[in-house]
Amino acid sequence: MKSAVAPQPATDPASKLEARVNAADETAQNKDAAEAEHTDLEQLQKIATDLSDMMSVMRKGLAFEVDDTLDIPVVSVMDMDSGEVIRQIPNEEALELAQKLSDVAGLLVKTEA
Image (cartoon, rainbow, N blue to C red):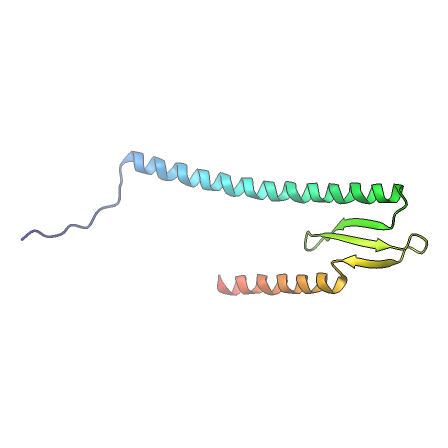
């Protein structure tokens, strides 16, 4: 009667090299994704600034910005005479809710880890 032999993990140099290449590739992809996200945020900031500058030159009551804590675009409709914000999209309540949900999600991840 023949006994079954469990397959052994590959220990040849080619397999080790392939594993290192795969690990290096994954690290490079993670770094590229982080750099792309940072670049996207910088581009979003620049677009918001450019749009706000254009609206002020045109004397229109629109302001474009990026929320500092959530990194999302915010558009405000303003009264040009008083400078009062007539409407903001998303409004302050929505921004506060999104921040609280983000904080809760962060706490959940920390407790699971």
